[in-house]
Length: 479
Image: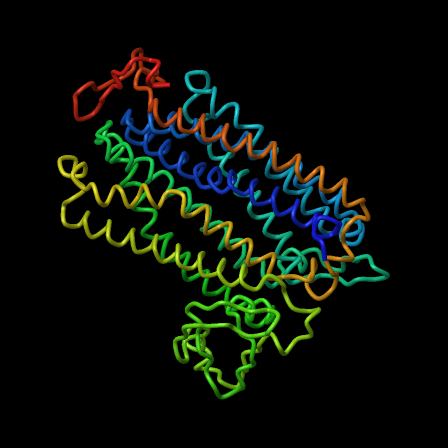
């Protein structure tokens, strides 16, 4: 089949492009909003001006992410009406409501108070400003809740039934709290928070590595580390719970994730494929390195050997996911990054306990700071890989076991979809490099210590070398 002449394939490619690109921005803004609440709360409690300047500095990156997230999120949702009209018609009774809740409950709340958060310093009472920051963070994370609720319902539809091709809702609460919802929302929330922590930590490490205000950014670095101690291992555990759900609710996806072609009968623990190359045509792995009984231990099937592990051959080819290598390696990428970030956090905690992160020694930890700089983009890759596993692994169903993707696409001329796909790719490429330019510009310029602090007549700037290291290059070089 020629992909460039197939409407369904082109529509899937277009939605994948817009979704993957859009996800880059709310992944950071949702977690960064929580960080802004934390640093502003510390400033209100201690009146330490460092935390005020942190709030002002990191909010610039928040606004950049928010703006591009809005610009790319709206076209993504419009595709439910343009490229996936039969799907919208079939499930609009529930799915449309959830998307509407995301816009009215989450996005509008976030947007309404964003202006106060950004421009309200010295204009409103500090407590009012703090409440605005909390509401912005609440709105950002409510978006995660509603989007994951909608997607979880597509994975495990509940609360109604299809009647003449239309999903009739019998119980909205059952549909909202579908079997995948709680773990999926938690997994994504922790993923966005962990990504944000390592981005903030990586940027702070860059400043420390380059001897630019190391004492100032050490505060952000240590604050991130404290939260990461909880988030990084918890994310691994919740990811494990998600895998257990897939075992019982979507066995074809699990088989694709593990490139498991043959069914492992009850009474026998499945081996775990550490690395392999799946061959879909031959229905086998051309080569693989396995850990004996590994999958059985991972999924805790040693306790329940009465349950077989179904292989891909157990299902008709038309009911299996395609692109098995993509699903297989995306899953391992996500898991590998999760353990790497947890390991980096653990090593950093050890160094902290050894007294290596004090104000006098933190700028000597070059190798550790380099590790955090390297880790800064890895959370993005893990989140995107997880969404690939989640959505590509669900195929050939758009609503699992109820509506096929091929039946959910609009009947459009392939040429029209190809033109819009090229248009999106061109615009998003421009947006990506624009965001990189302005983001790097914000980081190169660094925080402004001359900003007036609410309640004080003059900014409390400490110009000691350990605290404030201005960039003395010419303005042209700074830009």
